[in-house]
Length: 309
Image (cartoon, rainbow, N blue to C red):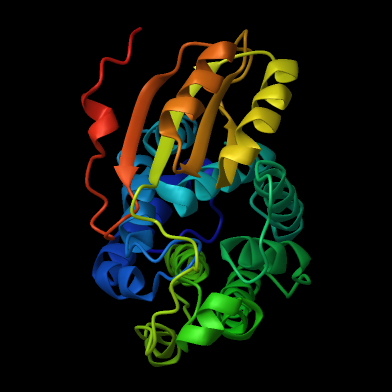
């Protein structure tokens, strides 16, 4: 089915379900490509979990909220920020035109980058930025197909622009995942897509796993939500930066909430100190720890501690 005159209200759920279908199909291949920021083989699963949350919602507004609350991993957290800004810029019943999408993609890329403390080149963010800069190309079917081509080329470029991917002779897993999402939008809208024979060439496992020099045995991924004023979030970002990396703080898509809700993501070897810093701002909820040691994304012992004290 195609939707040649659709708005986001019509397109959102079919798009997310199409993206979920292809992410599920290539989940293990994308996991195997995962060498940055941590070679923990979970990027495909993280994106699939986040997109699936949006796909199960009954409206675009509920979809971006579900992606926020159920985002997993560095890639899922960034994707939730990008998707929220994209949908809000387009509007639920606004005209879905190449011009409106161009503005929305620019807005979404900026929003995603602003959530990060240390944006890196050659990642999912690079595909977001390439889409933001893509020129207008004809009517919407042609434009969406062109965007899918832009996304696949940006994903391919990460094999040279990202050091870890270049060393491992592969491509950034998150970048490839976002291409699959964009390709899904083109498929849903008009049935056009980048040929599978072209993009499956990107889905190759690393020939040499170039793990970071810093040991990850004692590190965890921390994700939580909290409600706080913007000024307190600025201080929290400053406090968390020296405790780890891959720090991302995403504003919730719910409008008008006081105080604003936020999603915090951090890789850290000091989870207790990180949680202490969070609690100095506000009591966190939906607090999750997962191990970065062996790539199985298993619960860290920190999750066994009471989280209400």
